[in-house]
Length: 136
Image (cartoon, rainbow, N blue to C red; front, side, top):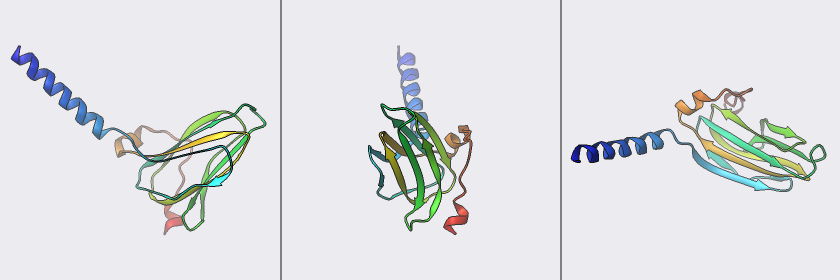
């Protein structure tokens, strides 16, 4: 019985450490149903934007999200869609940013999540935005 209890405790402790080491950390979440510029957020590399759009009028709704530096410099497009959709965009440079959201007939959610290097290696994004040139 003692051997079983010891094994179980070791298992639980290892699972907890593995979960902590490999878990995303939510930095900020923004939600809305209209156009707006979000509050600024600061994040270190690597990180992702997990975005979602919803609406009752597919094809007529519209969401466009752009990433800007806090100084207002354009960094890149996160998403532009007229449909209910979702996706993830990976960034390999950190900094202080804001989102500029243009929205019509839709609701949207943007989650900024800090990743570990191991988690970032598992992502295979279609496009990586290079921030180094803009931030230097």
